[in-house]
Amino acid sequence: MESLKNSIFPSRTLPYLDIARTYQISTRFLKEDGNYQDWVKIGPQETYEFPELKGPACIRVFWITISPSMYNIMKVMSYKDLRILRQIAIKIRYDGESKSSVKVPIGNFFGTTFGKYKHYCSKYLGTTSGGYHSFFPIPFRKSCKFLVKNYSTTETIKLFGHIEYQKLTFFPDNVGYFHAKFVQKRPKIGEPFEVLSVDGKGIYVGTSMGMRGSNLNIPLFFLEGNIDICVDGEKCFHYTGTEDYFLSGWYFVTGEFHDEYHGCTIKSWKKGGIVSAYRFHEPPISFNKNFKLLAHHGERDEIRSNYQSVAYFYLERK
Image 1: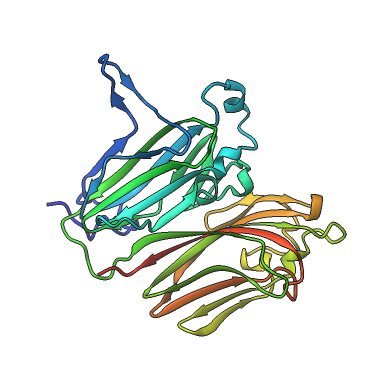
Image 2: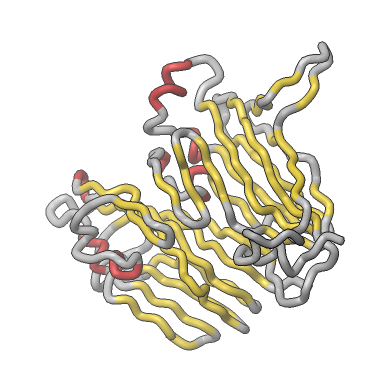
C-alpha cells in the first residue's frame, strides 16, 4: 500500500523503501500528426490548465520555464529583465473550488521581484539557469487544478512545465493546505505595508519581498523600517530592521547572496535603492486564530516606497 506517513514529511526519504509512489504530468502532448510537442502556447489573456490531479495526493515538485518571446531568440538567450514575469500568473485551486488559494505572478512566486531574473536557490524555491522550481509540499484531499494565466494583452509565450506528485492512501487532519498571498502596493506615509493578514489555524512559512525606495538623497533608507508579527492577536515578534528580519545587517552590507532559508537576490543603491530578499522560518510560526505581518518603510513609515511581497503559509481545511 502507498503510505502517507512516510511521504508527507520530507524527513522520511532516504533510505526508506515504503514511500508513496510518484507520478508526473507535463506540458508534453501528442499532436494530430503523431509527433510529440513539449510546450504549449499561451496567447494574450489565455489560460493553460494542467490535467486535474485527483487526491488524496501531495505535489512534491513543480517546474516551469517560459520563453519571453515566441519569435525573438535573443530575448530568450539574454534572460535578464523580463517584463513577462509580472504578466504570467500561477493559480492553484483545491477540491473543486473556483477560488484560487494561490494567485501570484510567476516572477514573484519564485522570488524574482520587479521582473528581474536572478539566479538563486533555497530549500523551497529557486530560479536556476532559466528554470523555475518549487519544492513546497502541496497536499490536497480530493483534487487540485494548476493553471497558468497570461495577463499580457500583446505577448504570446511558450510554456514548458511538469508537476511531480505522490498518491496517498489517506489525508490526516493535522495537515494544512498550501497558500501564497501576493501583495503589491505603494504604502501611504504613516502606514505600514501589510504582507499578510489571515484568519484560521495554520503555519506561516515565510516571505519573499521586493522593495524600491524613492528617496534619492538617502537610498535604501526604507530598510530602517522594522518588521512586526502578530500571532493570535498578540505582537510576538518585533525585528529591529527590515534586513534584520532577513537575517542580515547594515543594509545587506556585503551584497547579494542566497542560502537555504534566507537570501538577498537583488541590491542596488541607484534611484532610491532596490532590494529583493526572502526568509523561510524553520520551524514555521504556528497560529490558532489569526496571523499578521507588517513591514514598516522607514523608522516612522515616512519613506515613499514601492513594495511587493509573497507570503507562503498553510491553513487548516476541513
